[in-house]
Image (cartoon, rainbow, N blue to C red; front, side, top):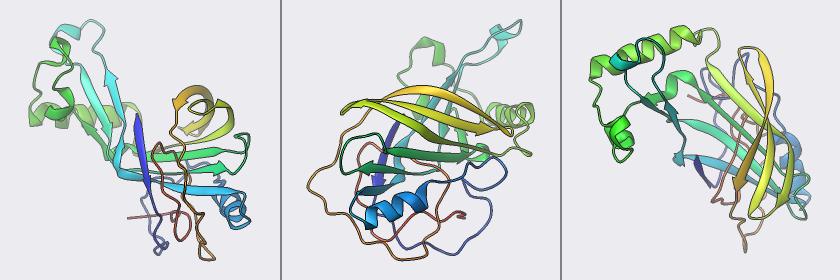
Length: 220
């Protein structure tokens, strides 16, 4: 997974169906991070979904493996933010969320270069069937969002260890994730506008300070 971040624009009006909204969303730390930034204690950044990549490789298995495909899934619209404290990393944090119906499946450019196990080219009908079966199997209509937030950050730049609480299907599981981070330098913290609402998720590798506040809690 690679992520990029850009300055945050003014928060738009709330709307439904966004990453980070709904019953599987975790409570956000964004208001506290925004307040810390205003006190000069760190910087808040937003993930730029257009420059971020998440790829998930799913391998065929079981008695029907010979007639199936290996799959490449990609998160196409990930919302998120990250907070970097001015000193140390103990209070750093990241939040991310995406909707399962925003997950792309088996785009040719994703499969290219992955070797013979991904050499087959699924048809449009194959992709549609994979999507239908996947969403049915994971109950994607009832639980459309996967959200995660850090509960602890350790290590030293550029290599950090992040403990993530992942919420899905109404349950929270913690996982440990090693990350490599390029810390920005030479940027002034922004002065966000008041009354900014926050998305419930985030992360970034290249970052720019936010210019107006957190992401909206709900986006189109």
